Image (cartoon, rainbow, N blue to C red; front, top):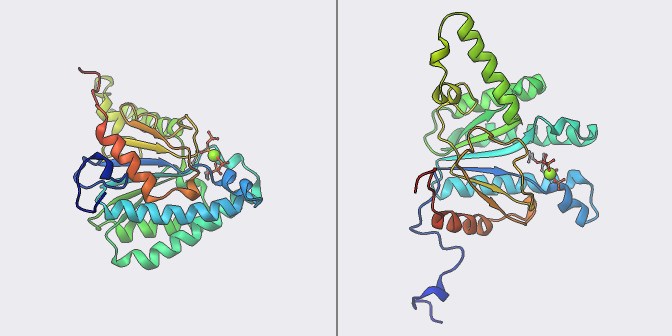
Length: 250
Ligand code: IPE
Ligand code: IPE
Ligand code: MG
């Protein structure tokens, strides 16, 4: 079939021109450990490869005009992993945050963090705050990194903050609404995710954006995160563009 011929057979999976893109994509970056195991490597080698995918995919999302990208990097439950694995992950976070601080100065991406960052080392916390401050005025994609994030933990924090406002008389019981709860989450001001992608074939949320994903479209891909490419993302985007989102209507 010639280059200029038309018709379905000529449509590449990668052709996302003209399709309706999600405004907000969430990705559960999963499968690093299994990727390493398949190669007879330590799990940490999978995290190193996964960090490269993270860099590539966030750049790609920014390039194609995604407005919000939320990447699940470390859950409230991930502290239960072997200490050596947690330490290595912290080292990779530090490397990335230092690199971002150097390179993002001229970038358009705004970096933000969602999760309880008080549990990280002072050094990592400082890097997060510096990155967030330095990039706050950037007008391109907002890249939310979910670090020590748990959807339940986020709701616990929201309940505490709302209780304080109730007790101080700032609000009354009748002020508690869906909007008020959303406004007390880490994602305050950010629209709910339209599309959540989970590579590595697992069919579960693992505590990611519980409240915000009420009407998100889920897309499960069997590929392991270190092998995830722009082509995989394009396939998810094409499928997303064909889904009918009814939000309970008809
Ligand atoms: C995701 O990959 C990375 C983090 C959770 C930090 P995993 O480490 O969970 O990889 P698998 O699921 O064991 O393959
Ligand atoms: C979810 O993956 C957390 C992140 C990707 C950061 P996990 O590997 O921790 O989830 P489970 O244990 O398979 O549910
Ligand atoms: Mg996993």
